[in-house]
Image (cartoon, rainbow, N blue to C red):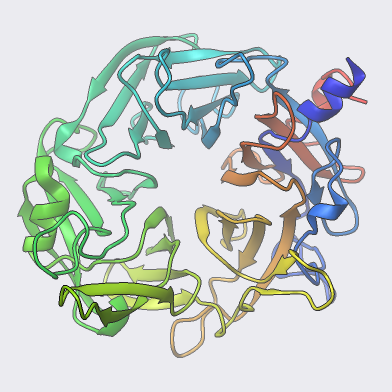
Length: 450
């Protein structure tokens, strides 16, 4: 049993606590000294899987010993997180999507009472698959979506207890897409992406398709049943330059109609985050070299030119810039000399979150999975002036997902860890600065896992 509990600690949602102050040695806004390099799987400790800056500790919040949705050795694949940011008992309940595919029980959304530790399934349906993005709305509902091609976008109306569902509503006008990230601006506009390699696959001919950034404009604030969907068009090379929202497009064929309208094609955009009037988009892959196959005369895509990036879209001017890019303001991921299999650097950025001081937080869909903080202060080209490596995952099979700061708890960063090498891994962790509390981990009275 001790071994199982130690292994169960290896996959979970992670909570990171720190101060909102800066010092001469710490990274701007979070008071940590950046790590020199990514984690090495040879250092994996299932009881403490995250490599962290000095002064931070880690503990379990909720894992598969609390709620095992998919038993029989199957991981629960916790993906994205949010809490009830407004309304009754604001900040008390954490909601999570589970990105499982092809299971008879279907996808699920779970909820954790951060005060008591109670964890349960909030909603589940046999038709749901690859649930990914989740976001609390300003009108006190939850929205979440499916990552598969033609994925659906749903809205949950909760009961007063905040741990059960009154109604789940399909919102097709927000777009049938390979959904991942979701964000909502002050006017109630909803921003989503198409998690697709924006190349020729899935479209006729050689015209790049899919992989777009979309904006849903409701007719009435808070009503997702009526409105129009637009796609981002950009006039510059490599998807940066002057942008514009074009449309409306057909939401039921959003990938194809968006492409036909001139929408910019990126390589697997996976998350979005609005900070101070800018929409940040994680583009997991870089563009590829294109060569012509002599036998067919068709284009063939080879190596990536760079390993993903984050773009920034000014929502007033619609200028699009490269905010974080390997070789510009973060290191290109390379192997460490003399250490076979150990990679370090920036690769395959996936999820985004806003830090309490306004920094952008980024996590990689990669092994090792790194967490980076980027200042939103930029140079003349729109690139972040300071990017620092905060944490890195030692688990040899897992990736971190779902980074999230509750606006009601500035000392807590939630992060999920998926498909660990550990048995019964997926769940929820807490990483706190030594001597500080936060709303997770052992400060909530959770049982010891050692």
